[in-house]
Length: 84
Image 1 (spheres, helix red, strand yellow):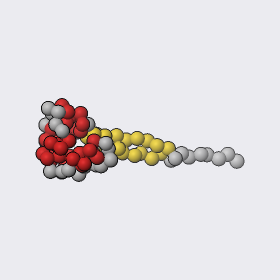
Image 2: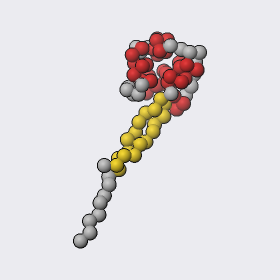
Image 3: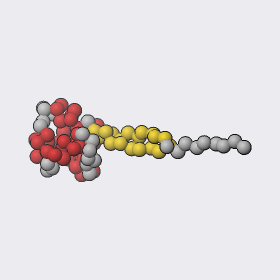
Image 4: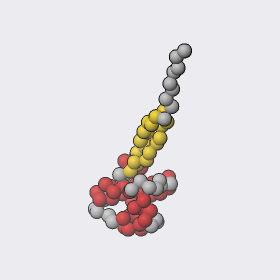
């Protein structure tokens, strides 16, 4: 009797951001200046840039507006397939 091995694949969605890149391109804004423009703390900007915090839709829109780019330019969903 033969056995068939099934490998379960899981797709994990990660949010990649280009916040630091566009912050620097916008005249070299500091994290604090961007935080002030969007009504959050500097620690929030640091956490988003490091990928430790996912901003709300409202904050993503505020960040994009403050940097003069679209949300799609600033954030990207990346699917990563993993097997179990």
